[in-house]
Every structure is written in structure tokens, then in C-alpha cells.
Amino acid sequence: MASASAEAPVACPLCGAVTATPWREATGVYRHCPQCDLVSRDPTTWLDDAAERAYYGTHDNRVDDPGYRRFLAQLAEPLMERLPPGARGLDYGCGAAPALAAMLTAAGFPTVGYDPFFAPDAGLLGARYDFVTCTEVLEHMHDPRRDLARIDALLVPGGWLGVMTELRPPMADFARWHYHRDPSHVGFHSEASLRWIAARFGWAVTAIGRRVSLFRRA
Image (cartoon, rainbow, N blue to C red; front, side, top):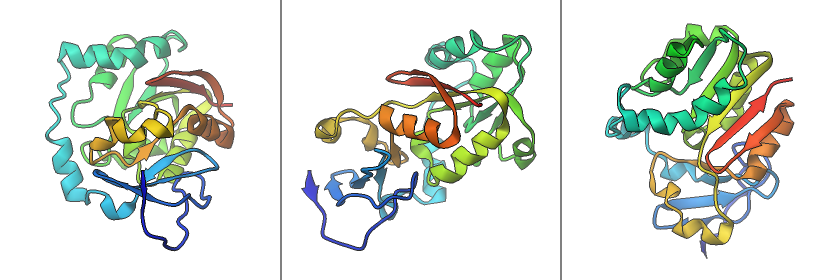
């Protein structure tokens, strides 16, 4: 990893600590936080809102696509095993094809979808839910402190949070990892950063896997 030129200290978007010296890859400029272990893409290399929405429009995700539903089942199945009958939920960042909400609703867990681009019903953020799902969303968060605090407030006491994001490999392997080649991905999590989040909000960690992690609100 080649270091970028020296510059003023930059705060981690997750925990606020001063990040380490930035470095440049072919895909952008990145910073590693020594406190929470998040790697973040420098905001100067983010897509703007219009370009980000257009990029999401290139994704071929369909509610009735069996392959997409199998992908989402990696989260849906272990989450449903833990939910009480009739639990109600919110899919935070549902995208243009709210397949997960449809799957959970059909299984007896009524679920609505919120997305700032494709389903921006702010009224849904004023309610509270037995569970929140966040599939392939953490890596897109420009302001993870705000979004995670919002998710915490959406959950009832004892509520569940299901997260899907691919965990970052060791830093020595970051350059070869595929995840940062997606220009809409701006935050790259490790098991350590997810445990930092859980400790910050007082969530119990019930599972952290390579792609799927489950938490429970106190």
C-alpha cells in the first residue's frame, strides 16, 4: 500500500478517532481507524447522490429471482429462528427490489422497507420494530454513526438486528479484495469493528460470520 501525502488529521466516520495515514489504491484513497478498525474510503472519492443512485440502478436484483432470494436467505433463515411468532420488522436500505421484506412477510413476520433512494418513507422511521434487517447496507453508509444510532432507536428492547456485509480480510490482503472495487462501497468492516459497534450501543453479539451477523438490543 502506498502512502498518500501528509495532510490534516481526519476523523473516523464511525467512532470519531483520528485515522491513520491514508493510502491510495487504484480504486480510491482509504484510511484505517486504529480505534474501531473500520477502513473508510475518503469522501473526495465518493460517488455523488445522482451517480450513486444511477449505479444502484445497474443492479439486476428482482423480488422473484430465486438466486437473489437464496442469497438473502443467508440472513433471513438464522434471523427467523430467533424471532417470536408474528414479530414485525423493518428492512433498512431495502433497495429497489425489497425481496427480503417480501420473504419475511410471507413467512409470518410482517416487514416494511425503507430506503433513502427507492423507498424514502420517513414515517417508517418514527415507529419501533421487533427486528431490523440491514443487508448489504453497512458498506454504503456515508455517516455510519447517524445510521446506526437511528437503527438502535428503531428497535424495541430485546429486538434483533440482522446485518449482512462481507467482512474485511487482514489489512495485508486489502488491495486484492474485491469489495472496494464497487465505487458505492465506502466503509469496510471487520469482526473488530462490528464488536465495537455492538459495545457502543449495548447490543449483545449472538453471531458474527464472514457475511451475516446478528445482534440483540438490550
